Image 1 (cartoon, rainbow, N blue to C red):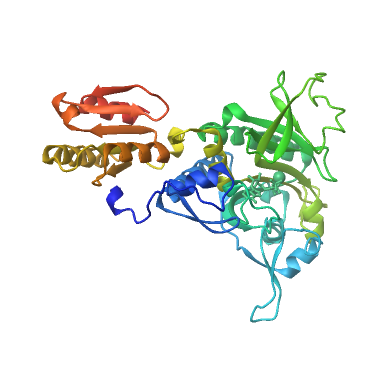
Image 2 (cartoon, rainbow, N blue to C red):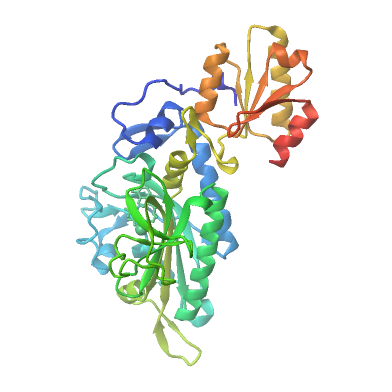
Length: 417
Ligand code: ATP
Ligand code: MG
C-alpha cells in the first residue's frame, strides 16, 4: 500500500478526550478513530491488525473442531426472558422502537441464541459433541468505557460454545480449549505475560478460568503463583485464603492485568432453561452439558499496544504487524532513489509480502518518526547512501541495529521471519 494513497493521516497531537495509552497511540498512528466513548472505527491499518488477530483465533478454534457460523447481534427479548437475563444482565442495550412493537437487545453474549439453535439439531448422543463459534460484534453498556479498545461498548468477541453428553467429555474439551488459547496468546506475542487465572465458577462449577495479561493499564488485579505459573483473581483470593489453588504457596505476587479471555463450564444452566436434551444409548433423555469460551480480538489489540511499545510508538509482534515491511524512500525528489524504491516495492509485493511504502514527499525525520509510531516489524530504507552501497538498509522495529543487505538477503530475511 502506498502511504500517499492512505486517506487517513497520522497526527502528532494526543487526542484530548482519550486517557488510555492504547487508544491515544492507535488514534495518533491512524489505526482507529473514536466515534463515542467505547465506540471506534477501525481504519485501514487498524482493520488489518484486527483481521489478523481474528484469523489467528479462527485457525486455533478450527484446529480443536470449532465450526464457524455467524449469529445475529439483534436478539428478541423472549430469548433473554427464558434465562431470566432480560432484567438481570446490567450491561444490556435495549431497543424499544422496532416496527413490530417488540423489544430487542443488541447481544452482549450468545448463550440465548446458540442454545435454542442447538435444540433444532441435537437429538441423540450421536449428534454430540458440537463446537459452534463465531467472531462477532458484541454490545455492552459498559459504565466506564475509558480504557480504549480494552473496554468497548461495541467490540469484537469470539465466543465458542461446546455441547456434550457428559462432564468428562466437557472436561476433555475444556483442557483442549485452554491449550488453544495459549497458542493464540503465543501467536499474538502475549504468552510471556498471560496467566491462566482461577476465577469464580458461578453456581455450577468450582472455578472458571480467565486468561489475564499483566499490564499497567489492566483494570483487574491478579495474584500470581510463580511456582505454578498460574494466578487467582480478586473475586476468589479470599476464598483461597490468599494461597495458590494448585500448591501450598502463600506468597502470591499481586499485579494489574487485562482479562483477555474467559472460559466457563456452564454445565446445564442454559440447556435447562431452554429444555435442550439428548437421548442417550439407553434411550433415556438427559440435559446437554455445555461450556463457553470467550476471547476478545479488539481487547487483545489494545492490550498488545499497552505491552509492546517504546517511547516512539508501537512494536507489533510479527504475526500482527499491519504490514510486514515499512519501505521508506529518503529524498523522493531524487529520481534514482524514487526508481529504486519503486522497483523493490514491486518485487516485494510480487512475492506476496505486505508492504507499506512511504512514497510521500516528506523529510526523512518525519518519515522515520511516523514509521516508529506505526510499528511495522521490519523497516527497509532506500536512500542515496544505500544506492552507493549497492543494497538496502534493513532494521527490525524491536532493535536499534540496522544493516545493509543485498536484494536476495533482504527477501530471504523477510520471508523466513
Ligand atoms: P470484564 O470483566 O473485563 O468486563 P467480562 O468478564 O464481562 O469482562 P466476558 O463476558 O468473559 O467478559 O467476555 C469474554 C471476553 O470478551 C473477555 O475475556 C474479553 O476478552 C472480551 N470482552 C468482554 N468485554 C469487553 C469489552 N467491553 N470490550 C472489549 N472486549 C471485551
Ligand atoms: Mg469474563
